[in-house]
Image (cartoon, rainbow, N blue to C red):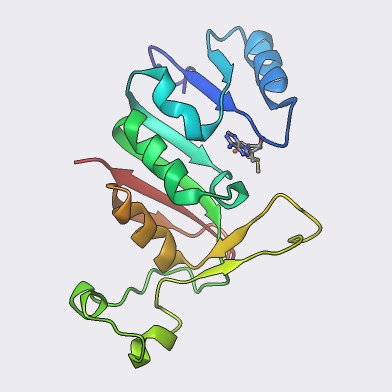
Length: 172
Ligand SMILES: C[S@@+](CC[C@H](N)C(=O)[O-])C[C@H]1O[C@@H](n2cnc3c(N)ncnc32)[C@H](O)[C@@H]1O
């Protein structure tokens, strides 16, 4: 972001990779880039007390035990746009959503509940590909509906691999 001309860039991390910030500082110093870094949990983003034009939230969502709480905190610092990357359950590189009117009146016995395109999250108890830091795997529909429920407006989704998606959201 700094190389692309951003006036101010802040990077935060506070998870299972204790050296992530150290590594990022090393990279910025090596490239001669003026970037701030803080060890700060996503849950505590409100502490920053300001908003950013663009928030990148890459590869973090599925490492969190409280993803909606985290996204609400992300929303509090997001002034304009969010770009989020996450793993997903396998998809065919398209977002095929159930219409919102149907979703509004869903019941426990509704057949739509069992459709593949219903927003669904798989919980990971233990490890995912030997990684014990992953807690859930959403389908693409769950990613965008969770984002909407946290006051983001998903407006573009891309699918780099069949197990991953990147979503761009606006806040207006
Ligand atoms: C798969 S890595 C992605 C790193 C980086 N965002 C990227 O795109 O290369 C997941 C990162 O999430 C961080 N993380 C996990 N829980 C976190 C939390 N509560 N707050 C901030 N970062 C967290 C981990 O420390 C780890 O560095």
